[in-house]
Image 1 (spheres, rainbow, N blue to C red):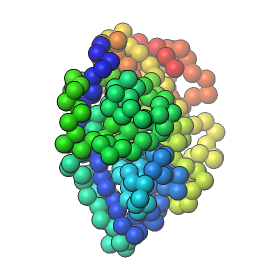
Image 2 (cartoon, helix red, strand yellow):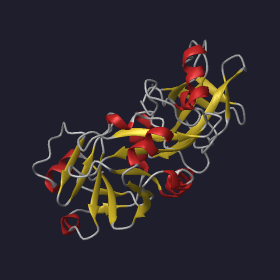
Image 3 (tube, helix red, strand yellow):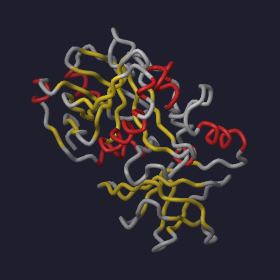
Image 4 (spheres, helix red, strand yellow):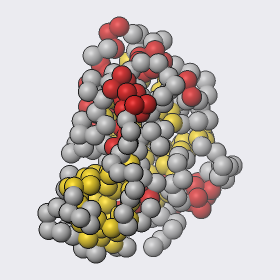
Length: 291
């Protein structure tokens, strides 16, 4: 593997919301606390429907040290369109403009590449703003997210790959579920660890679906948890049910990734004690819990 490469993240888009009422609009709709966002600190967030199921997820940032009314939501392109549709219902009540940025490129890169591109970047920074781009670091991901203008010539000095498996495997090891078309409005935040990855803030005010999400958080006797599992074959599929060793249904496969290192799955299980292995209900494929 060439560690000096850039991973082209052209499946992502940036939804820009700017204007006097931006902060109020987002604080009333997002599961995260926008007051914790700054030009030095990105956070993860999501939008839920009235039933408390996740519509979309994203990274939320303030991309400007000078403009505190500007925010970017970064996520899969199709889901950013869905997020746009969810927010624009409320935008007439706020003085905001919402648009998809088309002049940016997004890449994944390891620290060595980031330092070559931005020599003054501090590896401990969660967000770094430079005249030629922006670097984001979140959770404990190996890869940083780089956002540049399309005219940035420095990128041409690096090989670029469109193979996303290493980027997604990084997400899997961090148990970070990025909502895609097949997952939208299928899961509650707890089923996909959004309370653990802090995409949901339980100290902020109301947002759509907040009452249901909070009730589960504070009243449920056993919350579902997300685990990383590995399989000996590539027959896994999202939404497959899984069984414990007694044949009892234990949970659901949320996401699947077939990688050179093996077939991985993020599985959601609602049990107090997790077994070391499970089987899919269909095909009886073995799954071994990794973390």
